[in-house]
View (cartoon, rainbow, N blue to C red):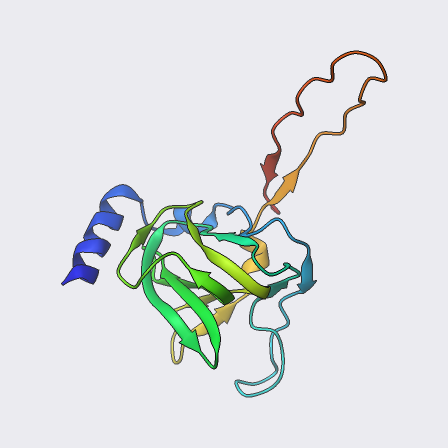
Length: 170
């Protein structure tokens, strides 16, 4: 019942549909990518079914989009959080040392999900795909933070840095 109520609330505050899926999301962390998405040749073949970020332990992890937490727990001694979006996509945040959400929680974009134990795995699955859940490349949906270059004066009080802007890939 709690999950149904959470989905109704989410659908009321977050529009669904292709336009919502096409927007770009802020990355879940500011760390550099250590291992990009590599689609496996077959369902059991090697590859990287997401993006791996080079995060030091204790790095905060934030939700890239609004959704409902469908899983928050341990898988093979690694902490995971799975967030389902209104369009049926599932975002996976893996290798978490600490989780600040529980199954059934509604999270908004930017909500803190936990902290990393080491590298962060971020994956995207399409639950509505034919057959088993299809893994998608999350890279095309993530924006990149851009910081304006500025000169710092040698004398006088430096001005605060301008806020970074999120640039979409497309």
